[in-house]
Length: 293
Image 1 (cartoon, rainbow, N blue to C red):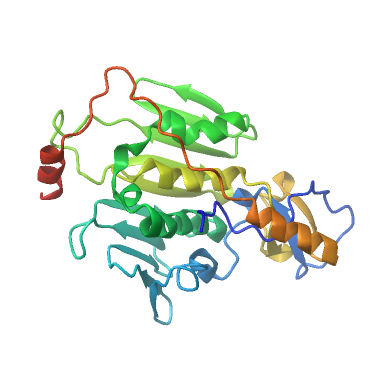
Image 2 (cartoon, rainbow, N blue to C red):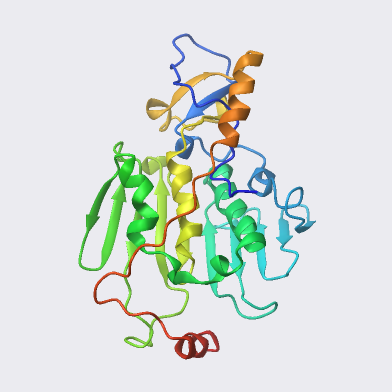
């Protein structure tokens, strides 16, 4: 099964804004999905982990927990926590995490779903891609955003990618390598994805060794064209001027198109780019030493 980039629930056809008042409780289709807000059952983020990939699930009154069959990747929704969606991965069961990802409480669950489904698929088909950071480079990971018209600015210590609307972006921090600055914590955030106006902004943080193909899956969800469903009353007022909205009812023909759009939504595998000039690979002994701290 190819990795999914997002939970596409509707067709990718061009949307037209609602021109007449609609009931607040009406279900509507909205795009772009990165402004849709979180008002969906959080289980949407874990949609395929148990049904497709056989992950083990456990729940409490407020939390959801999932573990991969190999016990190397763990994911959870922690209810009222500041960053309720958290994912950790360890190359060996019960070992300290090799990388950590966290999404805050206003993240649309479809964005989390894009990341988690790719993690689960890679873990099953190409496990090394789940744990090896240096399979790809930043420019490869952000290439789909550049092709979609997002602007890229490269500074001395970071790379910034911004949506044409100015309401979404990615910040890539370039820290010194461990052998250059041992004082850096192994989980220092390297990537940050954000979206929304200041009144309703969400963000996701990925620690330094998170493999770039996995981060790219979350980034690609930002440019996914298929709208997602919400109740109109749950759309944040600050986001409404920037959303395209229409009633969710659709004829059978549209539902068929939606299913086809979903099957086409997975991006092709990222191609491995050449190593940038002057960049040297991290040696195995040094990596093992750092993980053992």
